[in-house]
View 1 (cartoon, rainbow, N blue to C red):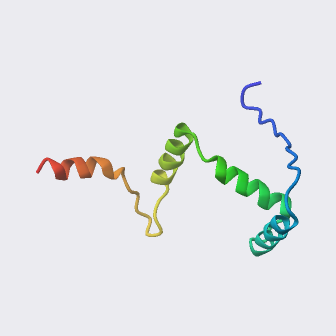
View 2: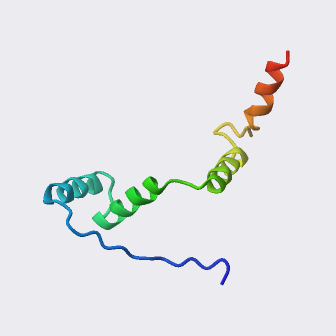
Length: 84
């Protein structure tokens, strides 16, 4: 079943009431439900694998800037400057 995304649920027991209140306040500030806020926090905390990070960087390089310019990887330019 390649390409199929399977979603999983988790249950976190024993959170202190003040932690829940802070999460609710944060969710409200971000315009999200408590569940969506917790999901966003967990996804951010899990980070990217190296392959995912490279893919995100490649995607950003392909996007034009606000002025319509496209930017290349600066590593080649830095190497060129070092050899001068």
